[in-house]
Length: 358
Image (tube, rainbow, N blue to C red):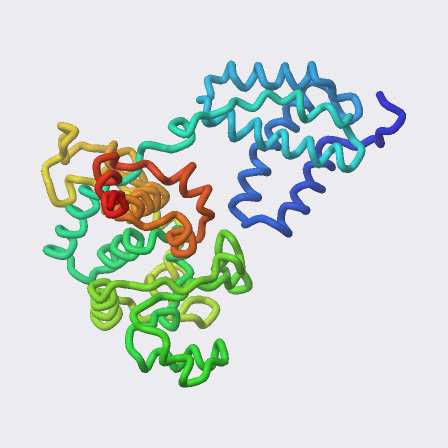
């Protein structure tokens, strides 16, 4: 043990590190960090290492080997070991481990193809779903949820956070901006409707992933704007949540605002082909477990909100949206879009570049 190190228990270090992350990261990110590093801390406890000063590169190697023996995918190893490395970087800062120790973590390097998850919802499937919803379930909550997610590429938490007052569908709605942002009539005249405004409100249970940096207005097409008007007028359940706010995606159950779990479940159901078509997986719809409540994600064709976001961003790119412009719409950096979301249809991408040939 180096004389320069200060004794620190692994669990105490974890608590210190998580407290630091809470000030900088979204709640879901912090929870993911905690879960990954807690597994490491539990392993240290089993190995009898109760002081980080005693942690060696050989110990890190043994933990790495144990995780690989668990059968984790390369992607999972990259995520989990990458988080352990971040934690050990913090431990260096607080003089609990030697400066050379984080470099001992062998984080697998992923190619772009490996980093990108291929389970995105394709544009063809999205268009079929939208067509069926318009035909058989027009302006329902499911229709509005899916259409808005596909059109804006918004995250689940951002969709859940929307209130009625965040929807600007007519010129009269712009008056709310004058009160909120202190804009003059002349300035208001520069803006066109329809659009929705995503806002970070952690104090009333609707934080955005990137906090204040995630706040943004997002323009809507006339078609989506009309759908939103029809949904609000005809279908939306008129309730307030526990904080006196009027959620756009309201519910008669719980707090009055749809929970993340409920929204996730609805997306899994909406993207099941047998909802409107014949099952492509040769399953009996009378006995298929994916049609039971709570098991919707077990359908091979079901897609989570994140996969719909991935498909939406890819579709925008295939339609010619530059990463820098799209980044502001979907609240992600251009580099993140290129790395994690950009899974192109190569022929469509060729056509989107054709205008540059001349």
